[in-house]
Length: 179
Image 1 (tube, rainbow, N blue to C red):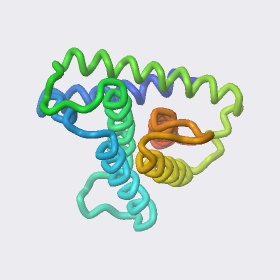
Image 2 (cartoon, helix red, strand yellow):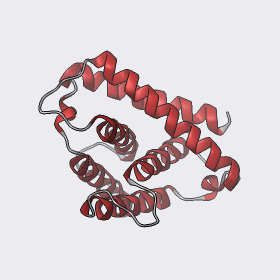
Image 3 (cartoon, rainbow, N blue to C red):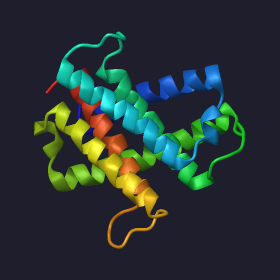
């Protein structure tokens, strides 16, 4: 399988989790402001790093579902940036999945363009490096959010969310398909 096929496979697994949670909870995440989404991604990335360092989970869930959560919260973040947050769950599961698919496509297209330019350099990286890069992107995002979303020269919050999604996809590919 090539990068596109592997990415589509792990994106599909993330979407399945997202769809099942929509069925359980609805789109309750619609009330989250983007800064809260960023904090939720931080919690997931911190947990991945903790598991990588400690090598054991007392909760029983490993790194794979946390990378999936970062993908899904990253897509939620993109939706919230586009629509703004709501005061209540204001979206059907169908609408949420249409937007989910839209941002999966955006992330995948970006990944494939960057992958072309970087000649699949991500394949020689360690999964722990993806974790560190995600954490760096989170802290950059928090700085941008602290500046009311304004940057002087850097990419915005959306670009950082897309990078977090794609680093997570790389981690999922490595965990699922190996080196």
